[in-house]
Length: 368
Picture 1: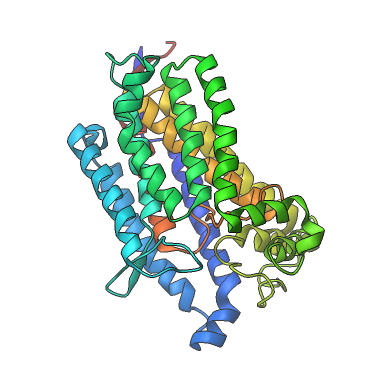
Picture 2: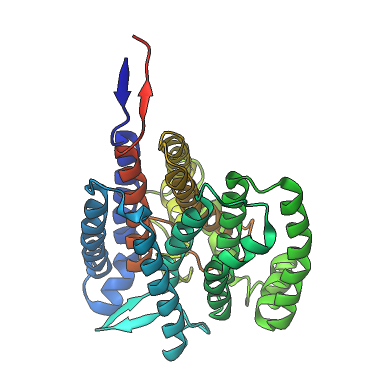
């Protein structure tokens, strides 16, 4: 008999749990800061709820699409063009923390790179999904990948090295899935390493951060201050944590506790058990996302879902790795959980596309 693959309810449940955890931690990590700064302990939670409302509208609008509009060339090109425009416009605004990453529109701050990541994956899925494309014809491949490379250059110029390397990893993953021969990937990796070294040499600030990461004891009170405070939070949580709302590191010790380092507060308040829950949910997101890709029945959709799944899960992995000291600080949000409108909406858009693909999954054969 035949059956149709419908909306992946398990993935819906994973997304719902991650959002719920995000709201709980949004209040827990900011209640004291919000009370001190704004006189309202719910200030940041209220703002996050407003962003969530926007994200849910985007999510629902995408999931309920009866046609896969995100696969249409016109939509993909338009989204990529908007992404490039956003990445250019950030340079006409002021620097925040030494980088050009934000657009200020009507009192709101938008981070274009969060949406450029999605646009880049959509574009790669479109061009690599063409049946007549020989992905191993390198001259032609480089030409058609020009828009992706332009986005990467603009992101690097901000500078946002974390997003730059994340997108590079996603591109390599999608090229491999699309059939690029392994020896090309190896040669590319060999050439990429010295290029990365030169990029770091040309940016003394970033080079200093790498050196600080490699020699943590020499920079405890400067470049490694956040990382050290994060490790204090993670280490003090133990197995069961100090209790929800009982973190001490969020009391103005750990900078950006509610954005880049929110996982450290999770570890401190709900311990190893809470950490494993969050990691397990992202692991399940990866499993269900790749399952949806396999059942998509469409080459472009397969590449798109694979790329978006790895994009979201890899970002979560990088954020968590920074928190526990495996990677140097990157300024990268934990999807669905870190406070921030652009991050939350982009994560909801990714989830919406993946779940919509599951809704349109191919017809499969099942045993009678």
